[in-house]
Image (cartoon, rainbow, N blue to C red):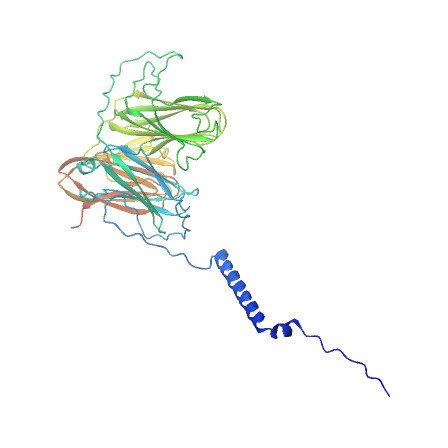
Length: 478
């Protein structure tokens, strides 16, 4: 009789055993579903699957510094909440003050609309507006000359607003309007002996007179801001008034709150200047920039030992001018000094009535002696890639036109067609500011004039490529 061997039952798989425990199977299924959901969410965030929603700012009724529209806007990513900011320099002044607005933490490639308006809405003032591009480091800079109109002078504060034109990013600051101070009377141009090296001569902003130099009276002290970095970014670590710019810090640095090297500074001051030829002088190491109003006349932003830089600049109209100086210390042993000289001259004859007096420079900054001065019957030029006149360069040139015009009392529309940059003054008041590189574009501004003779000034520069400038006006549409 054959013996039968016992056999083992077949081994169950883990799935069979799991199915015999329905509660455990349900728990495991929920866990797997949660993990899958988390993985999908993470992939969505990392790959940027969604479309950013752009918010169009609500249009405001204003006339001022218009920038043409109709060009395609780049897609931008909004900055982190709270990172975009603006700073004003100065933070207070009277009507007629040049306000400089600097932005930090904005989206590179974006365009920011900067507005200056009456926060009370009681004076019936027109909002000032300009659009500025954001640089690759997230910064921008814009300037407004606060009008000397009675309405602006009646305010105690002015609101400055910066808003992205492609996202909902928006921030604001206030400028305090103060009573105008009585300007220092000009000192007569009497020759003054040169001081010795031991003289402390900071009373006029570090100006060192020579036997042919006229001392330049200034208004108030320098408003100084010091930063603990070399890019003038963030909030200043030190803010103070300084009677002059004449410093050799050595290994100490300008303040205990700042490093001995790797810092930057910005100074701002007003000068009452008579028409004439001036020399702006700076002796400094490393990076230095200098503006007269919005004209950048010195730009040497790099590491270098101390050197002296002088820039000739012609002041065509007597009046108040803002001087802004920026300095960056990249290496130990910082030094910076500024002084200003008037070297003469009787200003050229006044602008003509029936044609434009055009002065042409072989640079984009309108400084130095013009290479050519001529009368142009109109401002309507399309030079293409050629030069505006024999002997002038095809690119990197600038022109200033002046003219007197009789107007009937009315509102007029002034129009610029430009490639690259241009700006327009009426009676020394800036009404159109397109002083930037750009392709051909048309910009208009409505402006009310009293009856009588008005001085018009148009400034233009061409950087590269086609050169186009046209200026015209007509009565504003009803």
